[in-house]
Length: 427
Image (cartoon, one colour):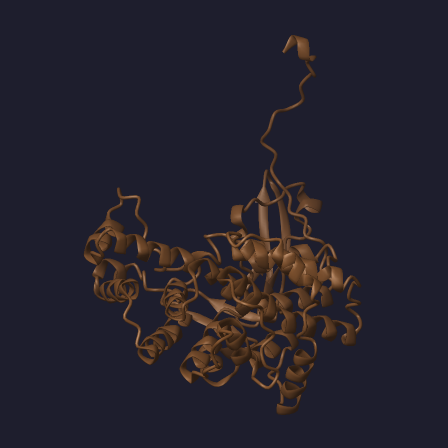
């Protein structure tokens, strides 16, 4: 039957509707599976399970396509600012000049963070991992904004979004400056969003701020490329926490914790740690490329290939050029980065990697840029979180406006069956 899928088990047939997405993706709607058949599906990691219908991001890993709200990532990275892309993801359309100016003005007006937040920050030792600090500070914002957002009120929804977009870069910069022992900074309201963030991060108390257009352009691209990536681990976490009607800040804090893992947002940190290990072992890239090809060697080449993209990561094509520009503009001569360039060149020419489409991915190049800017490796995932913020907000907002049900996966129980309790003296 057209637009129907049939499941047959033990002589009984069950029919389920087939949903077709706007990019011709097909999905079997199994909402009634358990009610009809008494069975559930099992899909560890949810690799074949769609948790929602979404109009935010389209990703085709086989063809290397990434689009936000229908716009190609290539065009957005080249022509838009990060704030424009944030507005697009959250509200569905690119802003007009007037809408963007209002968005930026509203963000500026909400950018102050309560001074008591500094006391919370002071409670962390310098050794605390920045992602743990950022997650805690984001969660702590709830104390200063305790009211739950009325999602049916556009005004309240907009206000909550503006507050977190305004305060989050402040928290990121404070996390960095705390670790560096630098005084905390609120930045400059006269600057554009990304440049103001750069100033908050890097301005030293005894130096004037020096604008660098290449760095600003590269940072815009980095944040845009990380802004959303469909239903990944952290995004799914934000949605499932928010599905309980937890507030925006609490949901985002959970997303930060999910991003922290080395299999997700921590991948670019893992790249630099690998490069440092190679340097400490003499810097022989050919040796490590051979180790990567040896199935019996536990060494894994970090920053190459991608779980989703079975072709070249489209974000990597864009950020590779930005990485080259930053290294040239800053005149960096760093042995770690030289090793990275050596690995990149060999991987792009070695048939083993080319045939398997193990190309350098966005994590590989983003780590190079962050290192060139002087950002410590443990801060890389924090930078990722700043870029992913608008995507998380957009996904949370979509989920709440669609009034999606609370997330509640099923399981197949494989534990002990019924047994009698044995008193402690008889065990």
